Length: 289
Image (cartoon, rainbow, N blue to C red; front, side):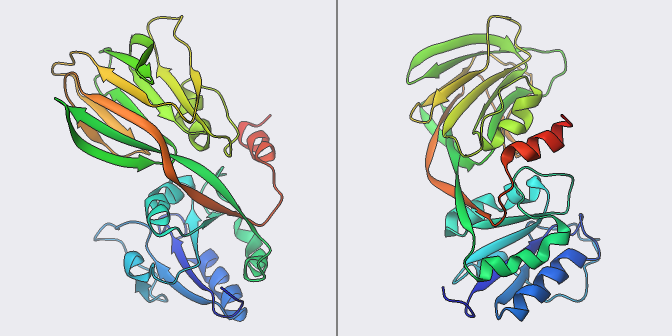
């Protein structure tokens, strides 16, 4: 798309910036550059929420056609909410951080002037791999989706362990009892994975991370696998314990002997980069090192 006829969706998390000051600033900069902008919600809001009156809110899916970029205002959670939309329509995402320090966001609120670089084409797209997963029950696929960060399988019952076996390409990786397991991407390595003792992996790397949560066997360690592996998590008997599959924070209830099969997706998310900020700088700030 040439300069002047670019279309950009602005998608703010209203819980994060109630007065919409950052998105208004972005809109002003982009309109001065001749960009067509529309403002859409990243997710459905509570009925009681009082919206900023100054915007003509549009429907995200209806606006996908002809959109060159999606600018997301919020934290990493807001980007995760929009990841499926971006993947489906092949629209790159530029994150503006109005939450706490995010790993995926590219710009801080005071940097809206840098959006001019986007209009001038002075940006690069950074591909991030995703995971396709499906739940198999009694030989039938009953649920499938895609995750950008991770898919977590865990029990909601405090103090109740679950037993599961993990396979890579059909070969047993480990059998384990514990609270569950995280199967994630490098992008998700700095999320739940790192809290559970998993490795930090550069977000543009292409690997599948398997991290047990509170494993009862100390010999069971987090594993970093090739992106070409198919990972299968097979549940044992779970009885009345609630066990849930949570892709990027969603929730799907699992049953006895369900199998969850995960593989790297053919599609990926493109994050827009306009600064030369390194992942490691963000890491130092975030971890306070």
